[in-house]
Length: 188
Picture 1 (tube, rainbow, N blue to C red):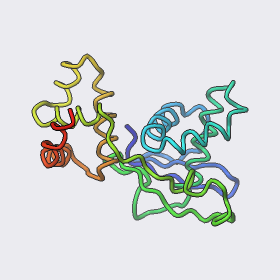
Picture 2 (picture 1 turned 30 degrees about the horizontal axis):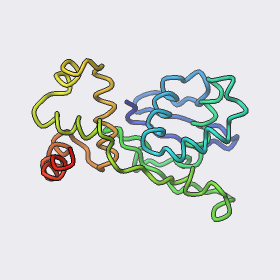
Picture 3 (picture 1 turned 90 degrees about the horizontal axis):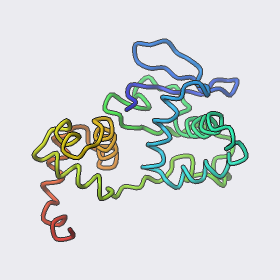
């Protein structure tokens, strides 16, 4: 899970990345950990943006690393491009905070609200709902062990749940689940 990151567009068209307590660097295709993590989150939470990015850069798909880099480069430039000292683009809880990035095509771009400020898929998946239910009685470690999945997978689900519900803690996920528990049980 990515946390504590500020992105900003450079005058030369690059994407700069500044993680808290680390040196700034220019994002490039060798930063596969960041790129793969971000692509996974975008695909899960903003599937329409992911599909759009995939189509735009499809000509580069034979070079996977470059293709994925182009997708993240564009997404960051459209949504995190301003340097903001008040709020990190990806905060300490892993929540993403989009910015209104200055763009000469604002109001004309065919990708507006598709790539820039995309609409989030807010409905939890069945698996995320199951993880929320399990969090009521188990730790993430127990969930991973009991379900034969990695702890990282459990935390990825938890992070996606937090982002979708706009909450910050596992306790808030548990409270949310308990508030809708009756509705969930009638569906399942």
